[in-house]
Image: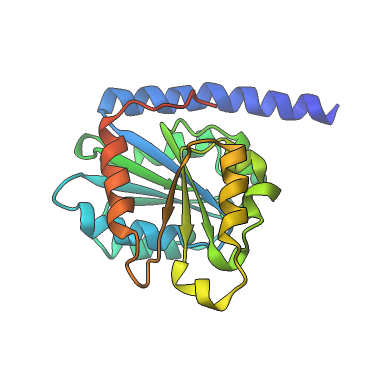
Length: 222
Ligand code: MG
Ligand code: ZN
């Protein structure tokens, strides 16, 4: 019984995701869905991208969080159009919420929308938001075993960002295991090593955003 309910929820979500995707296409906007655990540095990566892309792309942001507008405030402080979705405790974003968030953004004035999902490595994976690209972020202190444990996320992403590389000397992070697990789950997936503190990999991160903005997605939606 419960399985049927979940299937129904996902079917409705897929229809709404298609609506999001169509609206974005009409407006000529590329959307990226960033998924990770809480605290991996999603917002910091967005904060770094805003000034770096300022003269190249018109960037807007949709922030997903269970509560508060803290992330949206951080983004707004840098001058990017942003809208915050509060899920009232909900653990993932759904397409209906993104559809409403689009109404609050100046779509005619944007080339790229970054959607920061609720910090969670499990259920956001199952909810298509109408994005063209997905990025999975994992930070060094979370451990090298995250791809193997959260295989679904790492299988279905177009980019993996290994963040907080400045902490590598202080934790037991086995890069070889991390890379081998990732290669097995998603052969050829692009991996960026970044640190928002040291600036390591920031040029590659913003170059990736710039590149996918002009490219059609490699991944089928869903
Ligand atoms: Mg955040
Ligand atoms: Zn959830």
